[in-house]
Amino acid sequence: MSNILELKNINKTYRGKTEDLHILKDLNLEVEEGEFISILGKSGSGKSTLLGIIGLLDNFDSGEIYINNNKIDKFESNKLDRLKNKDLGFVFQFHYLLPEFTALENVMIPRLIEDFSNKKIIEEKAKTLLKKIGLGERYNNKPSQLSGGEKQRVAIARALINDPKIILADEPTGNLDEETSEEIHRLLQKINKENNQTIIVVTHSKELANITNKQYFVKHGKLVLEK
Ligand SMILES: Nc1ncnc2c1ncn2[C@@H]1O[C@H](COP(=O)(O)OP(=O)(O)O)[C@@H](O)[C@H]1O
Ligand SMILES: [Mg+2]
Image 1 (cartoon, helix red, strand yellow):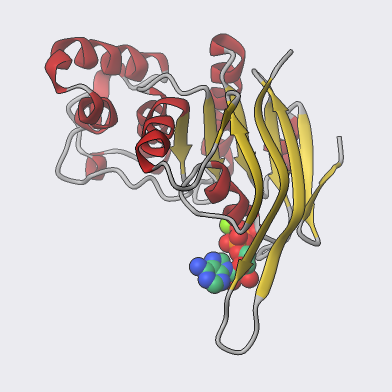
Image 2 (tube, protein in one colour; image 1 turned 180 degrees about the horizontal axis):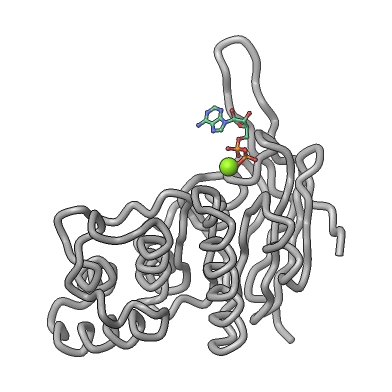
């Protein structure tokens, strides 16, 4: 199997007024296509920083990143934007749904940005996704009319609309109760199994980590494989 993601000797330092924080130190990671992996670690250990770098949302100081065998070059911003939209889907702890738009519109938006001419097709696809995640009846509800778990499902559907190769989730159930969290965990597992989409999830949930193929801990700026 080939690696969908490879990080080689990644270094990241936050520059401070009084001192610098060298948060990632020669960090390495290889992820095969279709893997479901979890990243755990203490608060402040650098998990979100790492996910932001993998997601091309944040830059790094040195090292190499390959996504789907494309070497990421920090300076080619057009290429980065394309990769970001096409190959990566994001789910955060907070849903970041747009309050003025319906569930359906929120799911459609990342694809409409890419291709405004195929609105009907995109709408059908967004409906199919919402049905698949159990929100088929709620297309026209705005975020304020949905529960926390439902909003997070919409955010997941939105992350899937561009058929990303890799889904990155940063504490996706950090704001949800136990039962709702379990539903989201099962949904992520289903997406991974049925679509063979690679999932990298940062979590404090042992239960979620246990259903992933591999568990990594961020320790002293590196990833340590625990399972
Ligand atoms: N933009 C930033 N500037 C300076 N320091 C930051 C910035 N972002 C995060 N940090 C610091 O880097 C460390 C790691 O943060 P983060 O990656 O968010 O950790 P985690 O997600 O594991 O809790 C923390 O000490 C945090 O305060
Ligand atoms: Mg974090």
